[in-house]
Length: 339
View 1: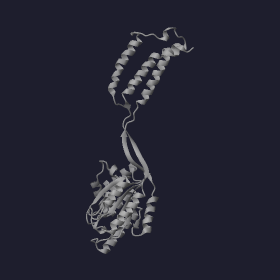
View 2: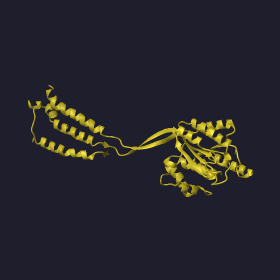
View 3: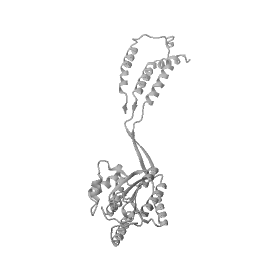
């Protein structure tokens, strides 16, 4: 417990002196019905309680005005939903129809999920976080409108986009214990390094791996940055599913067609290894399946906000003080009159 105004405790000094002089009868008295006739038996016992009850009332009222409070505690605002990172390909190959198809599907997807936290990342040559996971649908829609092809470079770094989406999902949990740079370096190997393993174990300990997923919107062809298999391997180890909604490249990809097909197949296999699926955006039935697939994912508790606050405790000594004061008035003025 803490006290907001401790200097009010100085009032206890004159209060203690008053109690001392009153107890020693070193005061100027005043007329009272209790001196008309000496009470006997239980009446005398109750009448003798007036002084301690009265001073008890003053004591608790002084404590009340010092404004006692609890220590800081955290209060959570939570919902039941999913936390989703939408990873959008804005490379040169998605110019035109491809990017418009992606934006239409993403727009419909956002409108269908009022109780989910949704974030948006984009990637081209580089990757960028556009919106941290939020429930503010209007913010997501306005941010989506501003997205266009080649916004962060002409090339396609799917791996960087996926990693940025992972970082967006765990931004709050990173704290000072983990850094994005070191985590990226630890997954960009043939195996997950100790740093990545310790990150996974810490997230498991905090129980923050549930109800998270990454959805990738791309033509599936990458030509720069880390391999998509690396961040997808991290997702698999954490038990987080990744999904792909694939569009047809609407412009040159800058990569051999055979190699492009190989990249698409490798991406599909890596995504399916996480438990996710690969959908084709040009097929209306597959898009409908995509919506249903996400709907089937179990909702879990999501902490939307944590607020540190104190609880006021002054009401308790105030109520005790007022009760004792009323009791003292009753003893002094009415108890003696009761037959």
